[in-house]
Image 1 (cartoon, rainbow, N blue to C red):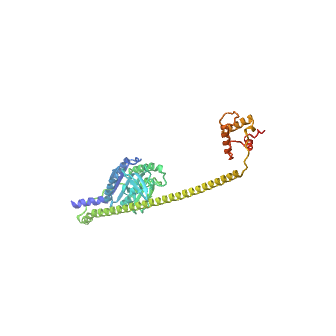
Image 2 (cartoon, helix red, strand yellow):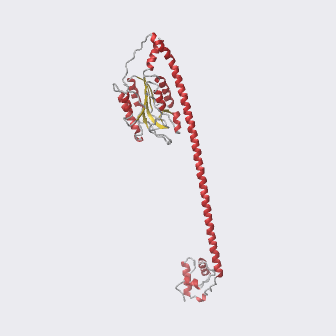
Image 3 (cartoon, rainbow, N blue to C red):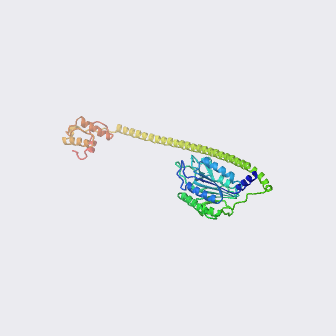
Length: 407
């Protein structure tokens, strides 16, 4: 009985295995335009092609990783291993990432722990004799834009020799058309897998939207038609060595997976640490640049203030020199004899008042009386001409005030 069970397990491990992750209803991001229903249709089509299919609709990050671990254990040594991803994807640092439904990003480095790397998935399917990763991408919209993210796929690592990675979009497709391209390619793959004898090359072609998507790696031509059942019965003699080999294989697989998991976690930790150091260094550089700009601005302001004070000092000095010259001129200027009231007729006195009123200096009545209001207005007129303030007009001032009224 034990030998029979081990024979069945061996046949199963050498068969076809597929993982379908379809994210549609996101918690922090807009809904994906393809839908989990399409993932279920592809899963049923793969089952009809003889695949053992692990399906996870709308998976959280933890659920997606658990499903991937389960798939990785079964993909080791399988004839054919496929991973089909449907949902939002972004690229950063030469890698493309599949976003689970609970993905929440604050910065690009969060992808290392909160999303699935297509590069890592490609390495997992490469453990089978032939593998393929099909990513039907849609483009997410973040409330706050995250620096460094790209909606188009990136794949800079070396693809496994026995695996191919297909993206439904590429740099040739505008961002506004990524969702439609993903839905078109997913629908085309569904219809192809429902045909009697689809091939792997046909699947790659339709999943990549002809030549519009992106394909990394290549594999030999392979029929995806459902294989004929393999005989299970084996002789005791031929089975015994296989039993021993198979009995050790799960432990070896688990050990390899654990070692790879630890190595991946260490790499992710180092990447996060490097990113944090780079961000801190960048912040220090920006702060130093800001401090330098502020210091430069303070220097320029101080120079401008000094220049302004210098110009103001020159202006005050010039005004003082002018005032001194005027005072000196007045001191040495001959004193003009003022006009006596008896020298002015009534009409002239009234015209003086009218002219002073026109100048805004006199506010009294036009009574031809040279009283205090008129004297005050004359004094204001003399001040405006920088003349000696006496309250009595000189002949020159009279002529200037009333040029057409000489007697």
